Image 1: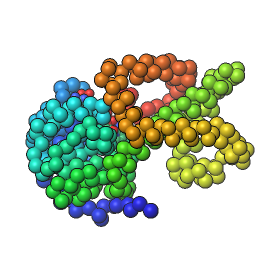
Image 2: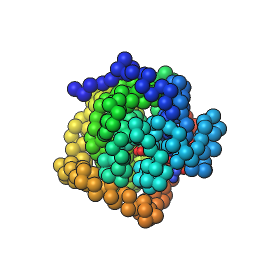
Image 3: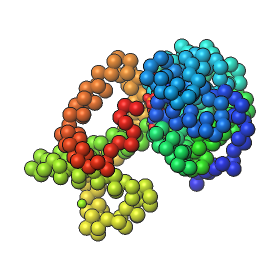
Length: 335
Ligand code: NDP
Ligand code: MG
Ligand code: MG
């Protein structure tokens, strides 16, 4: 069993009084910055001029350019989009690092795949909340927390591990529990989870189910409810008590269908494909492809995004959700 750390494992003084620069004020950035500030840490924000800059100022933070923030801080948490981190790090952060500083990440991607090569005299660790930034903030305000992983990549000062635990405590995650991992494990499992199951696997499954019903002549509205809307109810039951709890709540007919049909859809071939996906992640093929796609202006990313936004399931879904005032995004899209 992996060891889980809680608040009592933390030497809270190790980061107190140090200036923490949160670079980026998006999904994760705003949550880390506000939770750390509420817990009494010294936080400044590093950004470029633009939308996030104005929001961070409105939220009462001292905002500087990334270079100035990196220079002023002893702890630099990089919460920029992964595909931009390498360039921003090389141009604005690396020249301003001092021996003994801590370079921190919420995802191991850039360090693990060699896009960022930190100097030997700084601590490098990650603290990765296992949930979207807006939940990191919301659960903290409600007195709870999103659990997190932490990992030390490089311990230059002999205190990197305590700093990582203190940071996890600062954003609230020790209330829920914090697990130790490595950059390799965090990066590869995070990418695999989001590609094969959480995002890629689920959207493909939902669309295929919807298309199958609509192509067979059923009403798209009914297909939407069966294949997308109800997914949340099932996932909530799994979240609360695993497969067993979900199966306890559904009818025996649904459970029998689950037993005899699940593996007809997600077959041995699907699992073989998952192993291929994992191999592409492990050997860097996925990371290389994504950085290249981004640097060439994202032609495929934009085309697929546009096509999926026009998919019938999205059109029908927008109409149906407009008639269900209780269903609305908790976070305004694009924020
Ligand atoms: P977002 O896209 O939500 O936010 C990015 C922020 O970076 C914005 O404030 C943006 O500001 C700023 N930014 C973009 N480019 C620059 C630049 N060139 N110079 C300065 N600031 C810039 O990112 P996320 O919070 O989603 O991701 C941050 C990190 O957290 C990533 O490593 C990700 O893997 C990790 N993570 C994310 C999770 C999530 O749920 N989102 C979960 C766990 C980890 P502007 O308004 O100017 O564009
Ligand atoms: Mg991820
Ligand atoms: Mg049903």
